Amino acid sequence: SAVISQKPSRDICQRGTSLTIQCQVDSQVTMMFWYRQQPGQSLTLIATANQGSEATYESGFVIDKFPISRPNLTFSTLTVSNMSPEDSSIYLCSVRGVEQFFGPGTRLTVL
Amino acid sequence: SQQGEEDPQALSIQEGENATMNCSYKTSINNLQWYRQNSGRGLVHLILIRSNEREKHSGRLRVTLDTSKKSSSLLITASRAADTASYFCATDGTSGTYKYIFGTGTRLKVLA
Image (cartoon, rainbow over all chains, first blue to last red; front, side, top):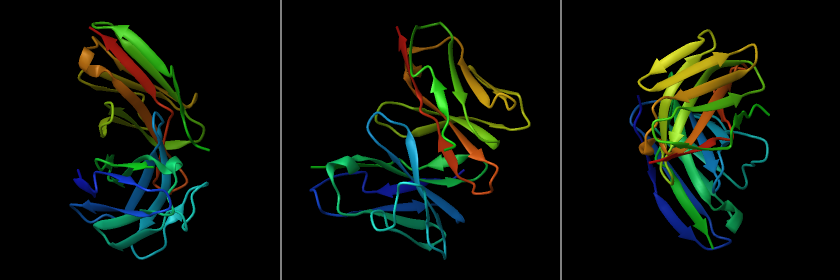
């Protein structure tokens, strides 16, 4: 199993600003995944982050809006840029072993 | 899109009754997982079932998988109020991308 921590756990931000979410894993992993969960909805995959290469984004998500860094095998960041109220969601990072493990999430509210 | 759909979207039952949730998906898969999410909290992994398996049990949980119909079901027996939560299935396709795509979820409410 993997233990995943995220910072911050929650934040309230103003429209037009950016927030960087950090994800730390207690073991080395090749791939990390970032998901978004909008209020009352299921999880939607934003991108897959591999160490040493650019992230792969899912349809509807772009690097300019959600830049991702993956500097090493235990850490990744997701930035939500130029935020609007529609970006209010829970953002979760995840890693995969046999099962898929999730961090506790970052609850973002944009005013 | 690979996203699965879950049925029903919402389910309300009495404590002690069984709850069945269904998940349908669109593409061939390697694995299917079920998760629980209590309101406003993180995801709890329940069961993983591989594409070559047909049924798995864990405590009061029973999961079946029918790859010919691209569907899975989660049965919770003798439900408790603490089972009140949203339940999601997640599938990984066979394209080698290793990503899991989540279904739309079922909101279960168990009445005491």
